[in-house]
Image (tube, rainbow, N blue to C red; front, top):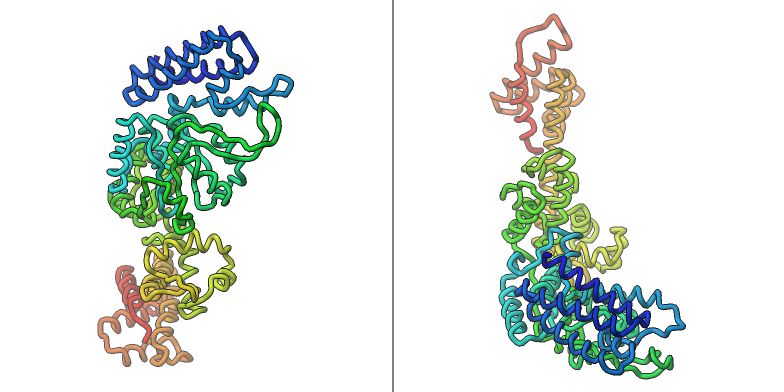
Length: 544
């Protein structure tokens, strides 16, 4: 029997033990079931060095509880010793409570690594160990030392706070910490915790040594933020509620097992100082370099059994905004595209095609970002302009602008945010003029050129000549008699534009046109290569 099977069987027997207590079965049966759990824990400790200390400690705790069963104790007393909660009353339906218990005990937190299983089944691109975690080297070194020290002490890690933009891997890193400690993982989200009671319900799932992760911790209600102080320092929560045993509303103190709290926030300035001071370890996650993102992308493609040359991975990395989440979302899209095309190789053509479809440029800016920058230039002369006014003009929700568009533009130094509003930086104005609009002009020229070449391929010479003449009219408005004949326009051009090579090409083009109009006039033969040369030359001319 392998390690995973042992843990699953251990969890199964543990839940059965709780069910026996809930149904008031003989305590001798409970005692026997507990001994089976203890035996499995000891086997887990022998097989897995990582789980050894935690499994052995849990086995000792359960053995001490099992010894009490030989004395004259109640079912409720044993149940409370195992779960830190009282048994539900017999007359009350216990189906709902049992379901809560199963959710709670399904992991047997100190032993099970179900959080690993969740990571593997739902997101195989997530790393599970620090050794597989790419980037944030300074944070990794400090975490490795803290984890080693905690294991030597035989105690949970001190509380941790993670700062950084959305998508940098704060949740992934928290799961890795739980895996490295051999602990369970209980995940909460600040905005979903409405009051202290919901906070208490969540903490009822916590076991000794667990990692409790609170995402967006800065959005905790004030009452919950204050209640968590004693939970972090004294491992207890005091609240006013109904006592399960007496059914009377009173002040209740819930004793908690020792745990590690990991908070994650994108707005460190919104955390109160008393809360911030209670985190021993404070880590700031920075945006990744393109080189690190490139490694993450290559690693992710390898997990999906797809080949991606480094040069292509780097092109994807440049568009990932320094965020692993963004990079892996692109990996998923390329995986789908490769599947549809029946290939396992991600080549440069596929990269170019997909990002053209997504309308994302080589700097990672999408259509919303570009619209934001161009609106600032066209309508507000670069700013400053108030956020509400700008959002009304863009017809985009304020939260989307603040949380999805502006963070990357700020990171790139293209915009500035001040008390007077939003404003383009000099780099932002230069980016709009030289990169966005410069490439739009090139794109328009390329579209024209592609149109001319398509006419040539279809042998539609007359349409081609007319189209090229219209192009020349736009370039040399003052050198053409727009009311004259085609021949007169060409003659004007050859006289006024001193380029013998171009004049020769246009003369041949003129004769080619005459051949199409007057079939009997066949003065010259103009090859397709010569026409392509003429197209290249005309498309390369600049407006005077």
